[in-house]
Length: 273
View 1 (cartoon, rainbow, N blue to C red):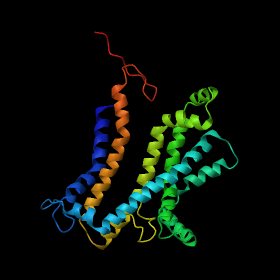
View 2: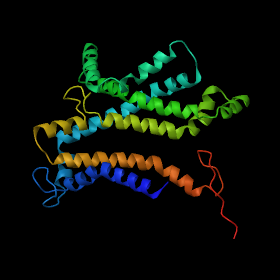
View 3: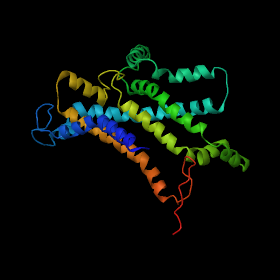
View 4: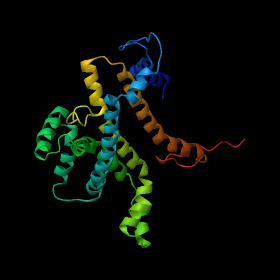
């Protein structure tokens, strides 16, 4: 890769990340409203964020709904991905289109539909209603990640295990899942982020999520606690990415020279001195 292409990539990345590096200093600002540069520095915004029920309750709601969304999304995305990749059945194209539909339909239209439908089921103002709605939003991306991993999966290792007497469940538990664990992890992480970052399909005030509370706070008043909440979200996503990248970096450092990597390319062996 040429130097100018790398420089362009670095500039684009810096332009995208620049707002976050402004929000983080603002989260320590001593100003009574959002202001940059900060006139002084204090931890009061973080104290308010982790002690004020107006912020702690939405944070708790977001965590509970996020983990619930991961469970429901993976319970649907995993069998759906296996069905789409490994089986041919009537209506397969329609089934795939229905799964990808939340990526096409505007979010506000889906929010209205969920509100009317869940209202008939009496799921408005409930954790279950928000979890189901967020799971529909997260399902397309998680399914795409899993189907891409399954298409590149070598099924000969599964056949070898079953030829040796392993049951289908044992083959999945001992062979398929360990090999595809990174894809499962990324799919679950995307589902959690999609739920934690969603601010439109938060049904009702009682189960308001953190992004919904941030939106309301910006609309009603410029509460500087928003900057602390934004920094917390940024650090949470950054921690998730680091957790996902750490095992890959460790494997890359410990892989002997000349051994093929995950893409089938081998590193050049050291030249003999």
